[in-house]
Length: 411
Image 1: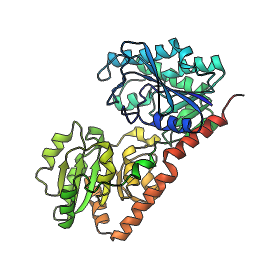
Image 2 (image 1 turned 180 degrees about the horizontal axis):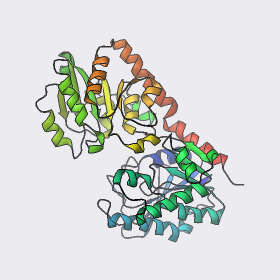
Image 3 (image 1 turned 45 degrees about the horizontal axis):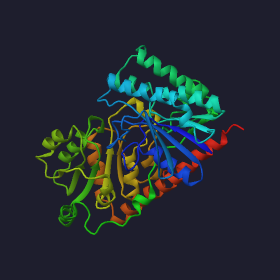
Image 4 (image 1 turned 30 degrees about the vertical axis):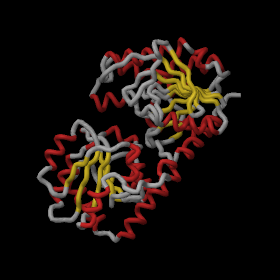
């Protein structure tokens, strides 16, 4: 097949997030398909953006993938600059349609750019070449800015986005959603039920098969705590408001006198405030952020891991956190403090699920895990590892996505 993958924010291991399009496309290319990822030259998510040297677009080959970069202006935040960047991307797809499709007639066009507006150029390409359209959903737009940003349904921006989502639901040959409980939402907006597929986020098994370093990150400190009898539970990741880490720190207050230490490792705007809050507590520690490549070696040194989010109605459609998959791949029991339409920890029986933003529940779960025999903890963690390999490894997910495309091919 010849696949055109429209994803404004697509990245790669060399460039930074978003990784999903790269991991999917790389496997499709390895299976013998031609894949073009069309992306903007600027994304706030990437650690490095390609330099087009003043050219309107740039084509390059990497890892078997054909990249088509459309020049886009830089921006900060979610203001007018970001809107200009979005419009430049959509305009570029329309303007360079012939160049994008120069590898031959596309069989599939995937519209996957967080916001649903790329359905319009996707429809034009599909109509011109007789290709199928797949709408890939990362987040629900415009519901996300409405529920998280409290924007009115009558705001012009929201009305434009809602029209685009309706077009996606009514015209796409299939909808692939990362959110497992979102089917009814799309049906409500015009999708036929049989067109829905859930293909969540995933992990790359090879990243976890590399030998651990002889001296892993924080080895001396963590070994000393273990020798002193501490049971170590870590949170790794962003320290933002949405991560609801106050309750994790406050759980430390409720665990005074217990040999349970709560660790927070990661960057974010809430870090310094949380550090001050944790300072008086012997059993709560803030460690400096580490690189993505060091995550496996860090997690393997822990006894259990914690993930939590604020209570948000939007999570009724389900969640697919990459951090949770890392935790489960590490083979460690997980305390899952998220109220959502799905619960991977409960499904895999690899930890304890509790209400969000509840320090007492966190402390009780921590104590329960600390009291378990080591062998029982290992079995629990292994169940999570097995679950991820069966349901969330990118080799598995890329094959599922290919099956969706082949099921809807137009002959």
